[in-house]
Amino acid sequence: MANDKSSMQLIARGILSENPIFKLALSMCPAVGISTTVINGLMLGVAVLFVQVFSSVTISLFKNKIHPRIRIPTYTLTIATWVTVIDLALAAYLPDAYAKMGIFVKLIVAFAIITMRLEMFACKESPNDSFWDGLGMGLGFLVGMVVIGFVRELLGSGAVLGYDLLGFKPLLFFILPSAGFFVVGLMMAFFNWIELAYKRAKGKI
Amino acid sequence: MMTHRLFTYWTAVVLFILAPACLHAADFVSEQRFGADNEIILTYPAAVDKTIAQKPARYTVFEETDPDIRLEIQKITVADDGRKVSLIFSESLNTAKTHVVSVRGDDGREIESIQVKKSYLGYLLSVLISALLVNNFVFTKYLGLCVFFGTSKRKTTAKGMGVVFTIVMVISALMSWFFYQFILIPYNLNFLQIVVFIGLVSLTVQAVDTILRKVNPILFNSFGVYLVLVIANCVIIAVPLIMASNNYSFIETFMLALGAGGGFLLALYLMSSVRERLDLANIPPTFKGLPIAFIVAGQFAMAFLGFSGLQLF
Image 1 (cartoon, each protein chain N blue to C red):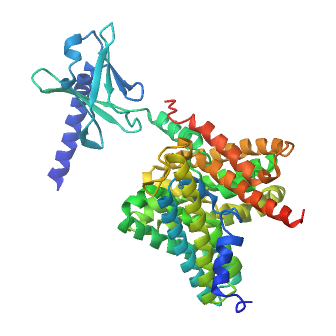
Image 2 (cartoon, one colour):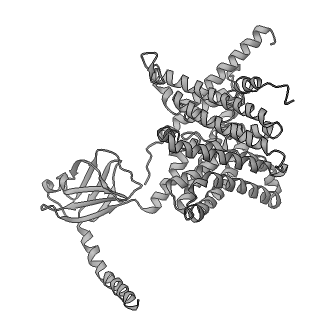
Image 3 (cartoon, each protein chain N blue to C red):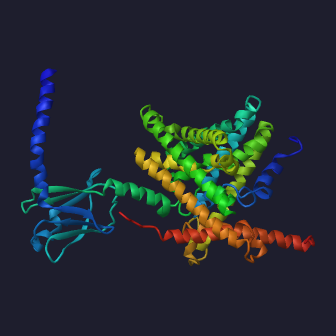
């Protein structure tokens, strides 16, 4: 099973067919909480990508030494270690961005998506495949965060990454924190609509 | 050594005798309290001269912890009877902190300095109310959403989940407080926060699981399923992290954990009530399931915005 999957397929799976935010509906808290701008989403996405890749590889390297009964605590502690690393690194090198993300960097430790990937993939496969799988899942999360951030920033302030694209502010409401729920809900509905339309066009329904 | 001790003893005695005299001087202002968001109200025992009492230069106000940062007084109003003087500031005050108001005479000498603070019980209640409503963990802090959307389909499940969460949250927060205050701080191990807290949370969940299984199997059958979900949830780990960053005391931590758990229970119950009705409603197929749940949660979040700025005490 491990060999018939190329690295590209693993990455594509994380971004498209098993996207953590839109398809699996896991790790929703940051998607709603701090996706107000593209840059915030990008920063947290990078942090999650780092933690996901490194914990996947770590668990995969030590998979034969971990007793099955204590595997969940082991995963948790591994993730906690890598989260501590990225938390301290961000606090030291990017203090401004770190202050904006607040408690969410530390909370990466409780993200269901990372534990799930360790349990379902990294503890069975080789370190090499685990690396690509972790990269795919992390990128999927990053893409999801950036897309939500893009929509909110564009509709909320009419500008993306400081560049004024629209020239006016369509709906200030979208930049408010509580709009995160609406944006995620509407985007999920939008993807469902595409899927339904696709199925109808193929005559499956 | 002996003389030193005697000296301390006598100083204490002298201070004890002199203390009432010092307290007497404080009677210059008979009552002090916080008024509106940006207001401190001083009450004098007798009427004061309006022109003298209204000079902003006569008052210096600062938070007890930062004496260097003087708070800017915008205007001073004196009530008609001349006894109530309210200092109005240009920015709203952080009423959780003790403020010091020092009153000066005409010659610039300090007549008196007064401490304005909330009662401790009121402060504790405000920590509780804040975690419960104003900073509700689900609707204004956006934490624990996976479990929130996963288990808010039925009212009974929602109630069970909320109760289990509250119990685990209180126990793990108090344990984390002990570890933080007595191990992490004294040995300068603050960087291990995340590892220690997540370990304690998993430990608590495992302990509650084992104890519940033996002591009350019926309850375990209805609640046990959710216990596994509790570990992978950010609400639970957020409480110790907030405790550590605000350096809360034991009772404050208890109140925070109780408020956070109660707030989660409230959010789950409200959401499950709506979702039970949504099952009967005619929803477009693209919105069925999670999308409509997110939009309902967004409306709840907007409603909870109304609690911001709520101050009962």
